Image (cartoon, rainbow, N blue to C red; front, side, top):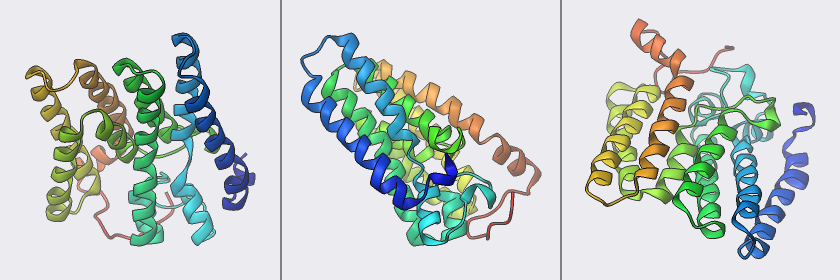
Length: 238
């Protein structure tokens, strides 16, 4: 499948089909039984998350397969090392939007916090294990944050604001990402206890956080050994 996954092919086939599917679900599923709405939204959330923007952008700009360079991941950090700041910024926004769209779709069509959590987690799973890349992908920070932005904007903002100083001071994107995730989770736990947010959203952070930590296990090992790549280092073959 990946041999056919050029930017042109993806843009002319997969993206229009996904866009049409989202529109169809929004227009027709609102009055359907709850089981049917879940059956329509949740697979679509996974497919939205599976769009491998980092892979597509670097195939388009550089003609390279991101999985063969750097960490082999398709997320913003590896895109930055290979394609530079502008491409990385585009990948970040697009990956973030996947989580936002999946959760908003669940909110609009199903209207239950449990559905939002499930859609956000499936978008995260799609990003990390994309059906379009033989179940390869990224680590999940941006897509996970996008889902949290819809569900609990304040903790998500606190996590994002934590990322910036940690990345600037230590220059480890992995450390900054994990720090931001843990801070967002802590903030959400406190605000959930205060009644500001549903406890279902806390379940989202726990499950998503566990997945993200697992996806960063190699980074954590390199951080402990002192061999982790710093922000700005060029990418080599994995």
